Image: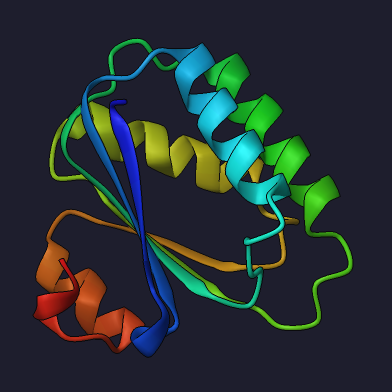
Length: 130
C-alpha cells in the first residue's frame, strides 16, 4: 500500500508515510479506516510524511470531504493533538495548505512544513522516530 502507518507509543505519535502515487480512493480509504479503528488514539500527535509522495491525483473535493469527515469524527475531542505534514514539493505543500484551510474547525493543531527537521522540532520528537 502506498500509505504506511507506524505507531510510536513511546513518543505519543503516529508516523504516516505516503509513497508514490496515492489515488483519492486510497487516501480516503486509509484515513477513514484508520480514524475509525478501535486502535486509534485521538490524543496522539501525527507526523505525515509526503516527501516521497506523488500528490498529482489529489483533488480539492477529496480534501474537502476528508476535512468534513475528520471534523465529524473528532467533534468531541478534549485535547488538541498536533499534526505535522512534511511536504517539500510544491504541489504536495499547496494541497496540504488547501486541506488546512478546509479544516479550520477540526480540533487539532495542524501545520505544514517543507523540511522534516522543522516538523520534528515542532512536534518535540527525536529524528530516530522516522
